[in-house]
Image (cartoon, rainbow, N blue to C red; front, side):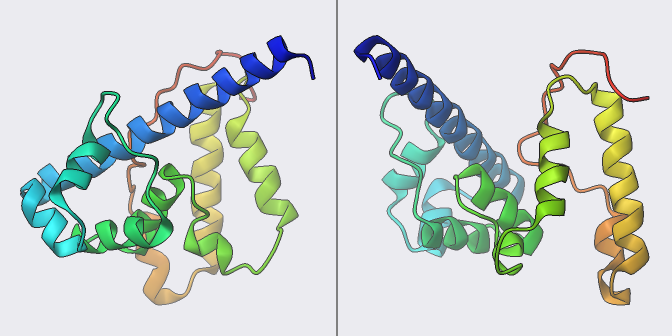
Length: 170
């Protein structure tokens, strides 16, 4: 690969990493404030240094690399998050959510779902309709004690920005 292309690819990867880190840090901060916790209290509960939590939440250049899986799980537990929210934080930190790891390998159907939801040509309303159909199907086959999870409209972390094109399946 020529140096210019390699440099552009590296710059794009750095930009994507920065964007992921911003989303993770903003989510941690929002959840901490929602829980009414100080930086020090969250750090104490998670077993990490308060300065590290501060850097995770920071929007500037002092932000550390995304935390290891165990640290993300410790932060989620310290924030009192359920398994679904912990998985969202894991995904924002660039880790595979536990729910996907439990599948034990590649799942072609889930890959198709992910590709559809990542398709930038699908409109926001089309994606919302697709998600609702998935919720209905999941609720149909869910264990009775898990059905409430599929009924609840759990907001993703952070809120999605629907800046996609407006043509899609209606």
